[in-house]
Image (cartoon, helix red, strand yellow):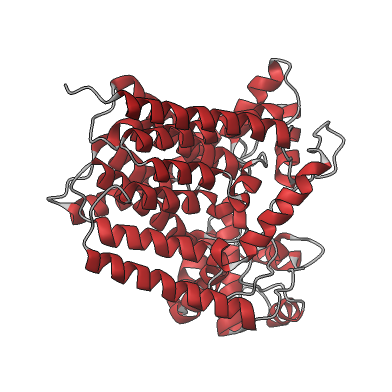
Length: 473
């Protein structure tokens, strides 16, 4: 086996050391992390020792272990997700540096401190746990896969554990983790790419199907009815586009009242779940279609009004991806303070305010639009498929993970919070950097660049001409 030059090993070690220093700076600067409303609710479950599946019980169970050891507050999970985050970036950057891609390795580290991403990563949420675990898995696997080498058994097992945890902390994480498991552990079979893509989609559906039994039986979380939010959101959207008669289970006057109050919004479903806003819609539907009947009503309504459903889902995906949307949208800026609480969940020092404000500014800009990163992932896939070497395989795998993650919001998304896109944006960026070590066709590169530029132009024009979005009730 040919030994690597000493210079490349030093570059790889330098990249890892810089990432370790950045991890230390992140922990010190943002300590003890931000506890959002969801964090507070989940910590209450930890204190009571009673869990439900509205928030991921796998994350709460991990939190409870630290709590039982005497490490209170949000700090332990903040440490976990920051260390996972930077360890993944360290290994990915080190692997690129070892391949003599020093500039790409540097950009990996710059991507790690990109304020819209890092600003959300310091919030103790399922999104941060998911992104950290996936990044650690990707970095570990890429240490070998970028050089087209198979992982040692212990590394493959650890990658599976990390991807498994990421899958458990977000119900839609399977759209990201399943293609990663295929691509990073087994490698894509380029002689049958269509078959393997179908296999990935089928496996993703199977994984999602077993999440509820795992949460409720294995992790002993009480059912919360979280699965009803998607049907409720879709029924409201259909009623908005097709008229109140499309969902006769709710009287037309109630739909009209909700419409007048602005509760039927494509941005998120929350007003429908708020008793003070439009909770009467949920109450009425629960009486008219209790339990599993709601699912039947949902499917029948979609089948009866497919155009209205499609318009609703497209409007929501546009809102999620911030394509033809104004710059100012709710749920964009990373949090600087924890939700007020009496549980001992503190906040970082006020010094973080400037960084988080910069994160909001950049996230609201065209460069921060998730659709632009999504377009970049498509460009990488277009230029690199089918891959012929390890770097190309990693690039394709990451691009597919980003694309499937973001496309899934068009079907299962119910809110437009920016934090949902942290992994998709990271995956697109890392895919582009991995692809920089390959030699794609210049014609394909030109087409990809023009496509991304066209998307950027649409986003810029939208930011220029559209008024700020009003926050939902």
